[in-house]
Image 1 (tube, rainbow, N blue to C red):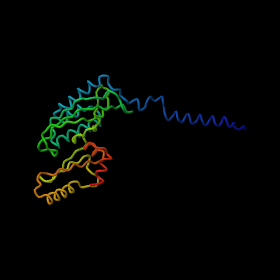
Image 2 (cartoon, rainbow, N blue to C red):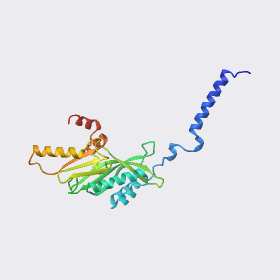
Image 3 (spheres, one colour):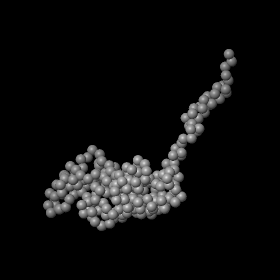
Image 4 (tube, rainbow, N blue to C red):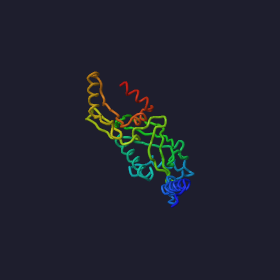
Length: 243
């Protein structure tokens, strides 16, 4: 029996590889990452302005969640933000469109909009002070099929990120002496409340006339810490290295 030539064998191998690649890619299925990407609406700025107004006017968690848009990530963001507002006694929240949000800047089709955020922290807040505070943040947005956006998350854009937009915020306290505000579970492998009690005793022993309550902010990650203080992660690491 005559054996196939080297050229024929090579051609068959290449054909087999080509078929394997074709089967893996399955172009006939019509499915690809791009198929799930939704286009930014032409009137993105108007849509965003209206959506931010709805977020600002929300008086219940349900209204705030609805205004944040559809999807699990938007729901998680909105629920965490609203619950943080309540835990920190934050009121008079206002979100105003500044720029962006009209061009996708990631492969998943999402966009970033700069928003002016203002709020008031009441007297009972762990971040006490009744003056209105204001800063600019970046909202990561997913365009939806209905022409609106889903708010995926918030990030600092030069200014400090508001504590109530930083993630899953929880407040622990020991009477009137110490409070710990943890973010996303707090510092791993650290009992922040016990550490805060120790720090409070040390301060009061050193400065007997010290009064007021010690409040400790305990973010889980260095990135969150950097966003809250308006510094780079490298700067935060340098500070931690000498304290």
